[in-house]
Length: 129
Image 1 (cartoon, helix red, strand yellow):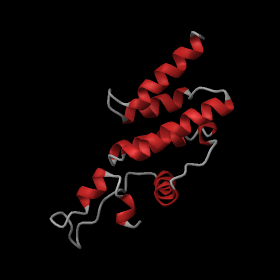
Image 2 (cartoon, helix red, strand yellow):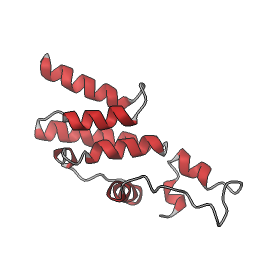
Image 3 (cartoon, helix red, strand yellow):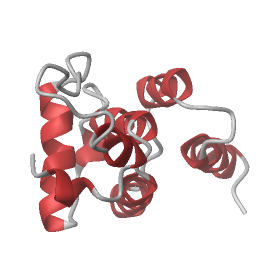
């Protein structure tokens, strides 16, 4: 990944500062799922998140993408993921699965915009306007 392309991530901005960089200290992302990080890299280069990922609820793709954005402090990416979730919800007339909710709640803080979206979407489903 080209570091300059990750300029929206506070994590990568800090990790690549001269005082933190050494040849022997690579940025360790070994705990991240390669398929999810690949989607992040695709977004960095294209600014686009493929539609229909919410349907991949068994894999929790969009949820894991949002949590990755939280870990690397990339609010632009998180906002793009939220827009993808909203778009998929509208287009497919579905709400995020319980698995998606668990992934987001386990991987985010209480102030998370994704948490609010999940609560609002389920509340709207239960109590239609």
